Image 1 (cartoon, chains in turn green, purple, orange, blue):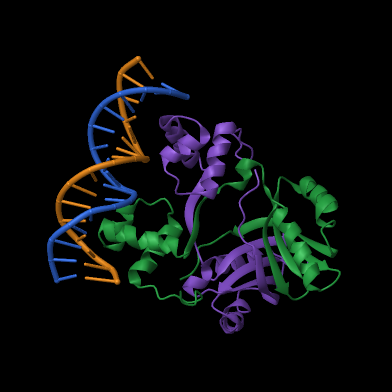
Image 2 (cartoon, chains in turn cyan, green, blue, yellow):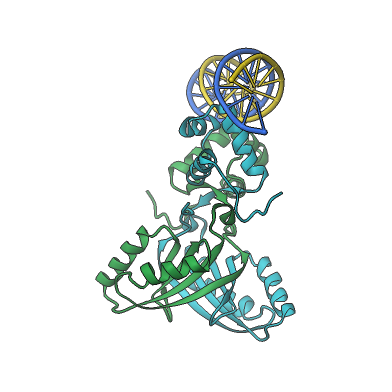
Length: 158
Length: 158
DNA sequence: GATGAAATCCGAGTCAC
DNA sequence: GTGACTCGGATTTCATC
């Protein structure tokens, strides 16, 4: 298998990827019509995109407020020490926290930036006091309550 | 229609939402089996969840590196002025920028936090110099290059 | 080596109950 | 909410380029 960081998709593959990124439940028949190939070809192409890992999954987007997760909070985290063990311990613990939707190791004023969804501010304060600051190696956190979600999870621009 | 911020789903609805959040392309037949109802019931339930907006869409997740978007950058933005017009102008411009995946108005050291995907650092520097700092009302930006994506777009915890 | 047409099989969507 | 029925799509096969 070649280096996965830059595949050469042809125009048809790109159209399939774009269509499924917008409408993940398109039937193969509709998809085939949209990209102007036969259903058989479309099916083979799509299957290949899944098998080779270019599509990592298909997910329904559930309205957060509908399931009691109306509050979004971004948190910057600084660790005590910058050792590989320290990072690994923190990351391992964060992966277990379901409330943490995103976790990225960054360069800059923080070590990590987290995106967290909870019911409300009270819920976040509890999470912060009981779990966030208790994560391994955490020296300090900086909280950014989201007051308005302007854009969320936009489609990849390709 | 009742207040949308807290619906009362029964156990079956919740199971459907959870299943589709993980596997958006599940067939109705498989979904029905998984939640232990007949296909007909499952179909009606699922259709209702879509129609009432509790599922806002289904999207295939495309591997960013596969489509030449290997770099992830978080950017904090501070505006010149804190007027409604200033916010509106900024938000309108950001919505037009395809590279911006997330944009949230936050409370704290920044006015907005952006999540941006580009090909590489060179691409980001170009974007930063030509478009980001030229957005309406931007006083300053703070860039956080993502060095490692620990967790990305995790499922909602409900 | 990939394509499209045809053929089979199974699920989607709708009905009566 | 269930069970059954019909239609259309998913998936495979195969001939073709």
